[in-house]
Amino acid sequence: MGRHRSSSSGKAETAAGSDHRKEEKHHKHMEQLAQLGAVAAGAYALHEKHKAKKDPENARSHRIKEEIAATVAVGSAGFAFHEHHKKKVAKNHGHHH
Image 1 (cartoon, rainbow, N blue to C red):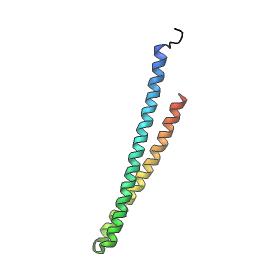
Image 2 (image 1 turned 120 degrees about the horizontal axis):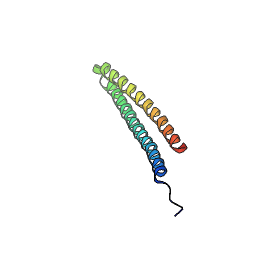
Image 3 (image 1 turned 135 degrees about the vertical axis):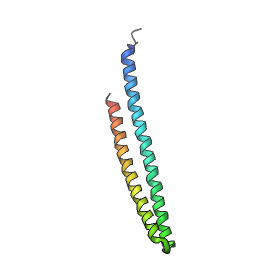
Image 4 (image 1 turned 60 degrees about the horizontal axis):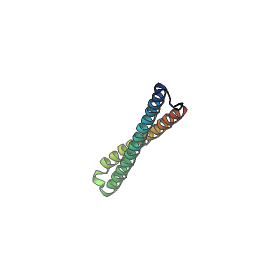
């Protein structure tokens, strides 16, 4: 009978731990989506680069699309890096509480 915790402290710890875990999972999912976006945009940029070589008549249009896709890929990779950092912060914050 001496093993029981008071219900208020046990629930507070569980709720706080759960919030940190949810936040960590959220950032992990966002990081994975950003990585997927970076890969997709990079693949599209390579596709447009190939099209520019194969279709010299419309090469300018393909080069513009390639540059836009490359920019999106870099931005998405940056966002993935940002979310990775946020995930680490959430994980460390959860361990300290």
